[in-house]
Image 1 (cartoon, one colour):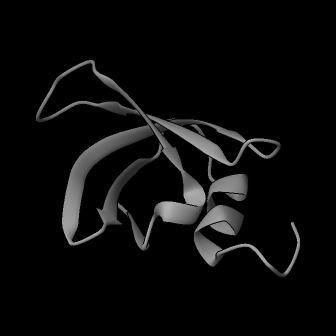
Image 2: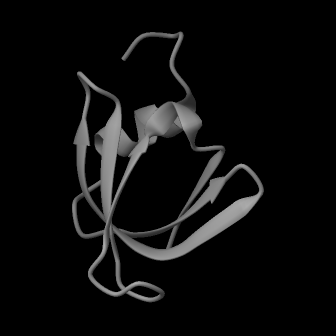
Length: 71
C-alpha cells in the first residue's frame, strides 16, 4: 500500500478474517466487532457486530478509522 494511506489501512490489509477488534472513530468506540474483509481497491473494511447490534454488518472506509484495537 502507498505511503499516503493511514497505518490502519495497512493493518487491515494484513489482518486475518475472524479477528475481534475495537474501532475508534471520531470520538466513538465500536467494540467487539469481528473483522471479515478488506477491499484494497475501495478501502472498505467489513465487520460484523457480535455485541451491540448482533449480526449487523458494518462497512467503513479504513481512512476514516482513527485507531484499531486488536483484541
